Length: 182
Image (cartoon, rainbow, N blue to C red):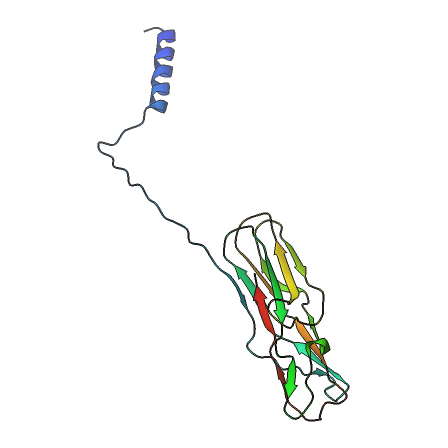
């Protein structure tokens, strides 16, 4: 065998080995399916808070943090959401004047934690009086994103309550601050 024939034969054998694959003697396919479920849009907040900052005397203003509020959006869409706050009760104390929402200031503050895909736009609302009903609330935070996927945003709002000059001293005041998300 001459050298040209040997090289040609060796190249043919090498290329044939590269393209040839062994086929199984027997194969069977399994078609696998599943359906994703729609997640939920939820909000959580501390069950109780006690305001201890500022001045608690009549004519003063008491303030403090409400605790962490968290929106969890596991819907997997790019729909965005709006979290808001309201108080249907204002603040009342036995034997003393009521404090309406006009005397209450809710401040969302900065986010304390976020997880989100893409580049979301997360915007705090303007500090102000909570709305009087769920239909007329104060905006706490908004979330917008062009990238679909789950997200979580947390913040620790503060509340300031102006105590009327006509309030009775040593009165325990209570009120309910409600958060909602849609």
